[in-house]
Image (cartoon, rainbow, N blue to C red; front, top):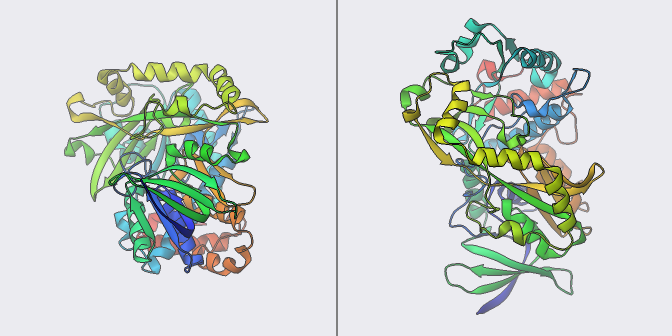
Length: 500
């Protein structure tokens, strides 16, 4: 059964934070454009953006040690940390604009201030953390960072973690109070609620099955209505594929050359969630440790205070797992059906190169609850098994592609793929993902709508004052932006404003 064909300006596939962000930007920049959203699930933000599937750290590289790499000579490369931090500053500016314009309300429903800590143990790791601190604390984006290896001081910063700790092994931590916890599920629902008010057509329980170019250069999508079973045909001038783990299959259906020689490897996650309110109240921070050798960056252990449904929660993890599904609600055939003739050698090369990752995932899959509790006790020595439950987190699909470093290189991060003519774009990959959504969507606008960018620039600058300007090189603007975003987002506590 096929229904009549409809045409629109923009189609967004997936109702997650990426589509919600791009749709919101476009409605501000081109309010007359018609936009449609197709989501196969029943509500917004139920996959990668969901608060139980997303760590919500508000990735600003304040505590994530994998963004600061130790060089062979012992110095610390902080360039990626600076880049990630600047990208998160752009997200905060855009959210502030939305709050100030009353396009979304109650920022505390999606963002909360929370200290970010990095924690290590062992003499060599302590020395590394001190060198990292020395490099970051002198940088204006990381002003206010503190370092301590004094156990009495650390007991003030992270009392639950220091309680019952008997080991004499050297430990240290850095702390910065300007961190945040972001509920990306709540933010996604807010943004899509706003878009619905702006007459954006949002179709839930609609699954995009195929897409092809028409003779007049439009994209025609075959979309199945999962409630009625009807197959609808929709045409658009521009299509964005923001379907999380489902993006790779959809990109392959487009047939664009830019989508070839790209593969994906799924990694799932498991968190331990504390169900004892008395324990939850003893910890107020996001504390990131150091990844095990061979572990992917998304498996860096962290003990997180979260605010979900306006309730304080405490999570530890993630423990990596493996499922061939590309989405939590996906199919066990996802991995095998993503292998095509054009990416077969790329995938095989990755399989040979990533033996250590495969071994790590197998070890993680075999862990019992008690073995996971043993890892948790590295953070919380007095943790009791009866206080913690296991929760399955979201699926992440790491991009595999051919790079100058070699064939079949596993990528950790987000990857934007656009057609040469700018009529279609897809977002692949994982962390820092949601935290850098605004920067990534601006990149898509620049690639796909270059003919509009000059006219749009004044509005973009209104929404994001630092657009096109380095905050590192303009500390007056950094100070101004920081104070404005802290006030708009309810983060205006004295500790939360950078003093640069």
